Length: 301
Image (cartoon, rainbow, N blue to C red):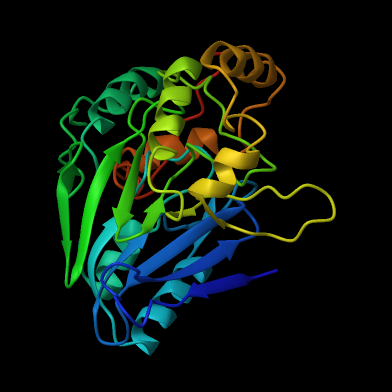
């Protein structure tokens, strides 16, 4: 199943209501977004996917090429290739997209905390830098993100990881893993540096935005009988999110999230994904035989 969805811009104020095109990857349940202001405008790509086969270790660009096709078909100019965090469930295609389409790779500036933790876990090469310089741009809370006529900004929303961010362009907010659709709830908070109490506060920070604000999920894991959906609103989340709707207290959420996280297995791709994503999607340095290797730490996570 390949699901694509475009939300049109408002005819009255396209800068306030940008166009959003979502491309769903069924292998990782991930949505990659292209946000723009119509044909010929500047655009940002958010949370891209590099296809990866964990059995063979081979990568492909099928998912990324769908993004390339959409961008070129609409004559868009890529300004930014953005990551909401260092994903544990898929590899980023950011370097490939930059090579094909241009643009700068950006992420929140707390990525340095994640790099420090995982450099130790993976015992990465001494040359691996812990300053985020693998990315073209590090954004801090409230930083503006220029995108043609669109006004973009960053919200710092840690909890799932210590480096999670959301991106806002007009009335559209790309929430990463902080929130899921109302019938799915929120992301886990048991990764290194994650914290359920912090996650609750970040979720409520997003839900303090105007009720009509459009929210775009990084993933959808639909319950049985529901098709994939990845757009909702602040009002809908406040009314019915099964984990953080209005009326759920912080302590109630922490108890629920902690109990649920204790039952979850690690994501299938966490080991290759994190060590590549903290490099802005670049592969580890090739060894003497010309092959790059992803490490598998034993009994470490």
